[in-house]
Image (cartoon, rainbow, N blue to C red; front, side, top):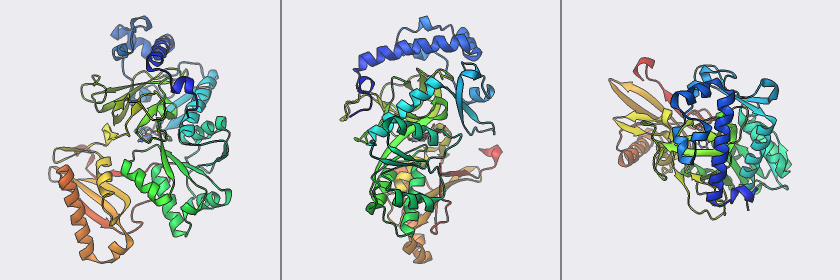
Length: 435
Ligand code: DLL
């Protein structure tokens, strides 16, 4: 049962007509108000009138993180600051954050998009929702907070961190829904076990996790460890935060809020559109945002789109779980490697915990991948020989599946820093000039 079936279950043709109308409106809106886009449109000879089909979106220029950085803080804002009622931000790669301004109307849309996400995860008025996404400039905290408001459930805004207190509150308040990153969900589950709190005996029944890549195997691991259903949220600051896409009870891909976001997949090298169903880089155009609508924003996230019939009745196109980011791709012995592939293979190994780190080092001229993974307590304590055997088993499993040689270091429990937000999975130890 959707939150807003008029849109979420709209026949595809009608939905696409709506998207086209909003696309033209947005192109006109930014052309009139943002010099950056006006100049680009003029250079490429496009106007709102020249867009006559959704395929024509391919004629429009793309926007990327560097454009936001070059126009920091509000150069890409289409409205005067007096119309802006809130600004969120995410850390950029150069020290200056990426800004996300909202008009009052943008905030209303965001609440609705997030309400759809939570509703699809099964959140209802009777629920007690513990929101352990960070509150502040990060869009996770307030995004989920606002999405819960239209549903009317009880929000407990714990923010991230103070893990023991999260568990106490979960127990004492009878939390039924936990919202946080998947890696923080694991951290909470682990701490609960240490405190002898069985999360299965609590009222907790569903989690809405996102903000970082996680594999289907990791979802299963979390569901098994906690006894809850792990649902997903996807989004990014540049498009207003979470609420861009979400999964339903079918847990079979993420429905994109298509009345608000036009999704495309392009080949990350040629930047040409790829046929539906092929993997590539995901682009989004915001169709209704007014403070800072993005045109064909390059997310760097790799996935594929599917428009198959979903058991839930929603007609919104689906994106598969994010496979990785173009900027996280490692090239080991000439093979493209995504951390998610390693994660999935590590989770096949029963002797290890789902806590790992990938170190990229230089060995001579070659890149070398070192996988540090925590051994289960009894395995680690069984001595060097056992550790050696498990390390060999893991490297053979990876070699057999991916064809690359890696070094595996089984480390002891808790050797890998626990995440309270987005986990740091890859540490690049190569000298800067050799990356
Ligand atoms: O992470 C917004 C968010 C908050 C999403 C809470 C979901 C829940 P940023 O900090 O700007 O925004 O990071 C955006 O995080 O381009 C993806 O690479 C990654 N990401 C977000 N959600 C998912 C997900 C928020 N479900 C970047 N799966 C995006 C994989 C995700 N990656």
